[in-house]
Amino acid sequence: MQDVWEVSPQDGQVGGDHYTIYKIQPTEFIHTNSIPFIEGNIIKYVMRHKNKNGIEDLKKARHYIDLLIKLEYETSKVI
Image 1: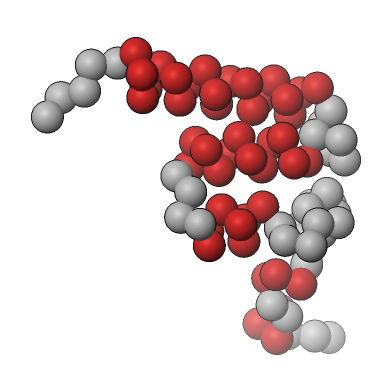
Image 2 (image 1 turned 120 degrees about the vertical axis):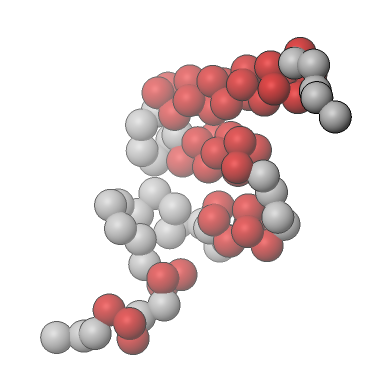
């Protein structure tokens, strides 16, 4: 039995293969570019929609876009 610590987390995926089809997985892209959480989720859901949950993932991406608009552009920021 192979020890889980001998396998790089970048070499596999838990729960499917909808990200492993890409040359650069969304998590690597998001992390490398220091993309904030909400923007990262938008990227993740848009990238996987055709290979995982279809329109449900696009609706999730839209939810995060609406949330980002609300938090970044419609809410008064306290300084």
